[in-house]
Length: 266
Ligand SMILES: Nc1ncnc2c1ncn2[C@@H]1O[C@H](COP(=O)(O)OP(=O)(O)OP(=O)(O)O)[C@@H](O)[C@H]1O
Image 1 (cartoon, protein in one colour):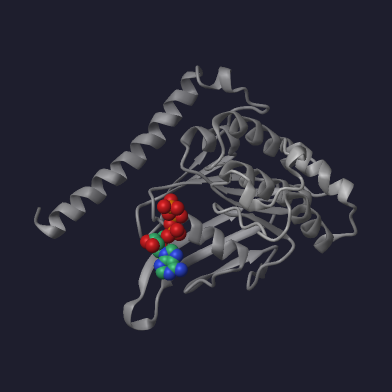
Image 2: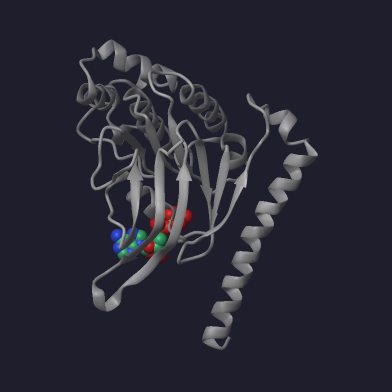
């Protein structure tokens, strides 16, 4: 079966020709339809840039990115994006933000929009503007908005980073439920700094090297679903995989520090 998303020898450099700064180098991976991919890597290794490329907001400097065999050249309704910084319209209430997004894909009532706000536990805040909500609440509205549009592909950049621990657990489980419901079989590409989150949610984890980001390793996460946190954290296989990923990331950080030390003569 052909992959739904294909990144082939993708590199990305920011800046003009004179001062090009390579942030991604030779990234190749196929993502199957319905797969849940999580992505971890050191800060600045190009995880958000990868989301930008898949969203069609950035263009690769070389290589190709395809969705169902067609090169991605611009954003589209087939990809819902959740950024780190909420990206809500500040002049619309929480409910209006969701209703507006829903209406871009189909005719929808305010009551339907309210159901999504209810899903993330925020129906009481429906008439509040983003400026009146906490960071975590804004992020929950952004997540509700993304869920509402029921896209086949979800690109999520640390979606739960600003959310408190209790809501984080709730939203992770909600995401797993929504992944398997709706009209489409959803494909999710989620960036996180949290190894446990990557392991709890993902079918495979892509581990990036420090900048310029290359794929360091792709780890299969074969724990049966539905996964149970309390059981997983005591499973020796889980602990071993977690330690392996941690040590890969730590090795990279140590390597990076040594490079800096050597380079500056410290
Ligand atoms: N618009 C831009 N112009 C120039 N450089 C950029 C731009 N956006 C990102 N960068 C640089 O590209 C590199 C990769 O950034 P990116 O945000 O993709 O990394 P990241 O892995 O998501 O980082 P973090 O985990 O800290 O969020 C960084 O060095 C960053 O400073």
